Structure formats: structure tokens, C-alpha cells
Image (cartoon, rainbow, N blue to C red; front, side, top):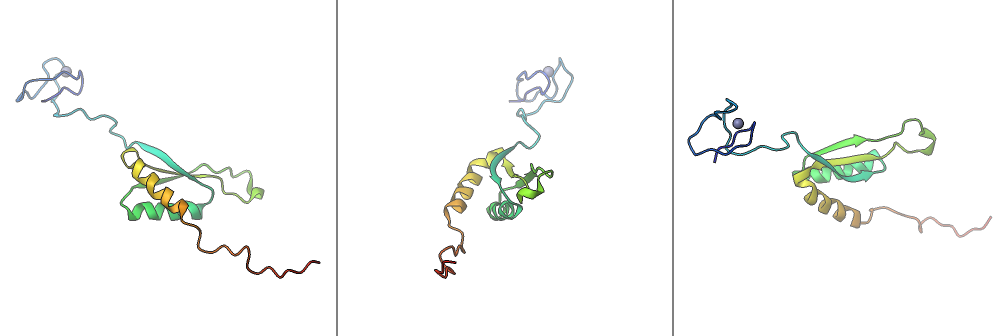
Length: 120
Ligand SMILES: [Zn+2]
């Protein structure tokens, strides 16, 4: 059923134009035409953000990185948080993928290796 994009009135099939607004009717109302991005993750480093981003892209999820960094604090050794945003309709899928990544332990942590046991 055609709608008027201006006044949202519904019209009979075959109607081409709203008699009130003089605009062409559309078959469905398009809401939120701008891509609606939502935050799904906040990474502490660009490396972390990029690894998540690439994982999401492999799954066909469009990502957008937004750096919330605080450049005034370089001595903290942080680049600020990097927010990963995805389209709202892909947010749930993206969160699943990120959760899986988070549950996968990092490949190389050698905290116990290399200890020489000496006390100085
Ligand atoms: Zn109208």
C-alpha cells in the first residue's frame, strides 16, 4: 500500500501522488535513512580494534572505528579507547563474534616461562 512520505497517509493501490502534499507516494516508509551505527566494543588499543574489525569484516559486517583517544595523556601509554561501531541491524551478530574472540585466549602469554627463580 502506498504511503505519502510527507503526511504518512496511506492510499489505495495505484495512487501515484498525495493530493494533499503533491509528492510522489512510496511503497513503504523509510525510517532512519542514515546508517544507524551502534557501539559494540571499546578497544584499548588500535591493534585490538583492528583485529576485531578484521574478524567482523570476515563475517561481512560493516565496521566503523571511532577513536575517543585523549591525546593529552601520552604518558599513560594509551592511545585512548577505540570504539568499534557497526550497523544497528548487525550489532547482535557483531557482539557474538566479539564475545567469541574475547573467549579465545591470546596465543602467546609467557608469564611463567623465562622465570629464572633467582632472588637478587
Ligand atoms: Zn501527504
